[in-house]
Amino acid sequence: MSAGGGTKAIVAALGANLGIAVTKFIAWGLTGSSSMLAEAIHSVADSGNQALLLLGGKRSTRKATPEHPFGYGRERYIYAFIVSIVLFSVGGLFALYEAYHKFHDRHGIDSWQWVPVTVLLVAIGLEGYSFKTAIQESNLIRGKAGWVSFIRRAKAPELPVVLLEDAGALLGLVFALFGVVLTLITGDGLWDAFGTAAIGTLLVAIAIVLAIETKSLLLGEGASPEDLAKIEQAVLAGVGVERIIHMKTLYLGPDELLVAAKIGVSPTETADDVARHINESEARIRAALPVARVIYLEPDIYHPGAAAPPPATAAEPATA
Image (cartoon, one colour):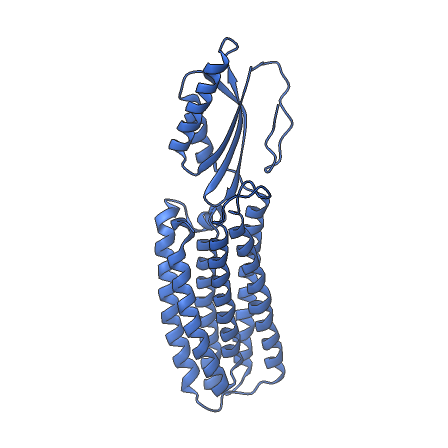
């Protein structure tokens, strides 16, 4: 996994969540708090998700094969999508089920009353550290983009996933603390049920956002307008290329961009000249945008009156 994959953030989140999950299960066993159980399952789901992200990053580095000639870079998208499903089903739906059960059995917290509050405060500190690490890693690559834009536009799925998970975990802990404290004050387990329901709703919402964003990556996203401009400038910077007739791009993985373009060349150029211009253009593209690793440039004679080619799909660049 590349540095952009945020391995440090994933490992930090995994370590924090494993430790937090154990303490939450102990607190739930001692107190019977549904908020603590929902949070414990949430931490288990998050730990599994981070393990999935690490596995996806490892598998995506496999070399290309005849069956998969463009490699396995998209495995990172697939595992990120699985993460959204796990978060929705294991985390969100379980918490909502537990809240429903608690609404019908509204017992308070009668023993070890200090345990859940202590565990939640410690967990908030650990999750805060994990969230801080994710923010620091994200700042290395997000540039001037806002956080919403970064999550929506990032091609490496790991950091947006960890950011949303950590943000959801912190909010979930606040909801759990709210429910537990009010339950301890009033003796009414209804507040514990409300806290659990809030956790479940939050996790379902985050899972839906993750699913939408990773679905877009799986379908195939092209380069950003800024990167398209860099490619165009690189192609037209040298001699021998009169124009770009049309161009399509596609991310084969977070660190590998496919560029397919039909370029207009002079009808007086020799085959050797055209081949040299293409090679020089490819070198300029890679210098301007290192992530552009797979480049196909097709030379053609531009005819102003010719009909424009039909739009190509993201995974199927237009051809002559």
